[in-house]
Image: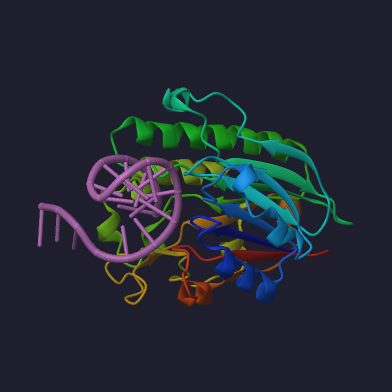
Length: 265
DNA sequence: ATGCCTGCGGTTCGCAGA
């Protein structure tokens, strides 16, 4: 089963690009981040016409996540469990997590996440990022206890190591590269999750994001911030991983590219 | 040192992204 994660930076602005990629890559399951619309504005029919079922956790203008699946989906959850302790979500809940059980002959649970950016460092936004990562770890522990195959995939908004950036110095003051962000990412992995990129022995420089600005793409000033973190039961079924770098060269590209993991059926 | 680019809302500039 091929499962893709892709931060599309507005599903409506990106629709022709996204459909073209889906028709070529044909993943069975897709997690989108930053759809930037409410569920009623999501172009559901365009994806249903390609044979996908659709589950959405939308938000006006910002954030928003969605799952597509050619198999039925059940046990759908919108929002990350737990309460935000920082008060940021008192201003309105942010739609950053959707999860479903993919009812294939050998099922896989997929959690699709858009982790908070956290800039600028030292503000409530950064505290919100770290608190969100704690909530994610707590939820991941709950899922691990079920002993199911799952992937927690999405835009983690963390540059885990200097090798995950072409120019690490440029990120020194950025929330994505702070020691606290990196420590929280390591702590999440070390509860017993497997980075598909590592399982697939992806070489350094396998970036997933290039800024629109300053010719970042043309200069390959990228970072690796989009991941599939697999449960042990999913890692046992790991067949391969592909980062679709070519998507950054499409017409009207997202600033992120898809990452596709292949699990044994 | 700063902005570079893109999308959204709702009008054309401020905010957010990373």
